Image 1 (tube, one colour):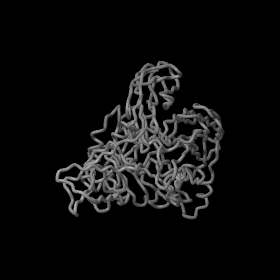
Image 2 (image 1 turned 60 degrees about the horizontal axis):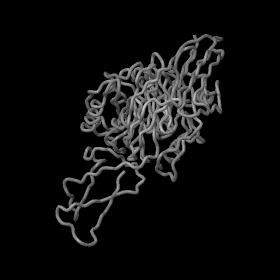
Image 3 (image 1 turned 180 degrees about the vertical axis):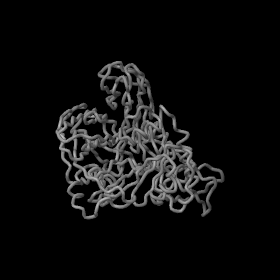
Length: 534
């Protein structure tokens, strides 16, 4: 996004060395405060030419944050009884910057009881509190409710992260403080800057690795080295290592190098996991994807990829005003799961403004045993994770004691015992469990080829075979749990949970192509559980 501002001196004169102040405002662009001037071409520098000659050095600018339009109270999702934990309080302006508004000291309460005093602050602050009693709790500050926390003897998160945001190394993005924003503004536990074109350019790849290395703080905040490629389908790569070389052969093609090429040239001898995103643009779920491909981005700034649903406030053509992007066909999460793909549910922002974890985009919750890069990636690969539209909803789902992400065998006639528990950030509207008898394709075909015949009638029949095995509407409470049994019919079965909260989330500012702030549903989606016959 570039602007050209021409300033013409109409009368008088300017003496050499005299200071000139220019104020540029009244823009709806998502300008970013707290960037580092001069760090890149995209932020902080202004090209000034006088009589056609560029002045050196280029003047630097800083964006000042605006007034607060929203506040958040963010706490961990689990802790031990009596164990101190952080309460992070942030206020944001209309462009998701930490605001410039000042807030007075206030009580931090739980069920009406004061736990601590929030100090006066501007932008953000944090304090520590502890809760002695087991169970689900929420804190409140000045009428703002926190996300729920589970107090228990063996906390295992979930930890919250955004694995797909973009900054200045991506040609179509801006921002140069990705991990500072993720940790200090969005209060995430982990994040990845997955830049376009980066791994083929030494200077960009060096910058990304430097960010990743400097901000990685196991136990407090984890960074994950990542890249994105865009040929054939949009594919992200997540690496366990940090010291990886540039790919010399990608210098010309950058992010448009083929996925196969990167796998063959670069990842064969490296520990890596990969992800498909915004599949509803036409990325066929009948295809054979790489064995490394474990994650499916079910929601991002582009909208929902659960299934084709023009009535949803999360429909792709509504979220970014890009009519026609969403395609009808076997391109969505439901199609992937119905056609035997064992993809893990994943949510991330794909934010192009350097703002990982923005509330109305998406995040992934990971039930990891510890906050390290290896534990996060291993747990996600095992499917012990789920996605939300940005809110830190707690979601637990199991069948016969097997948690989300598991695949287990059963005999025809066996009882399948379902259990779902949801703890919302606001009143819940519905909790649904959907099931489908899935079919398997031919995984012996090469990557990028169809696993089914193009006109196979079973593909369409199976895609349409989803049914609700639980549908609870009008819940109107913060917390709900459900258990029930069904008899297994002996067919391969895939099941997942979808949660919708009652109240829509109003976006803080006006997005491109919109006239007013959008209102979007607040949702969560589990990773499926697969049941196969003995």
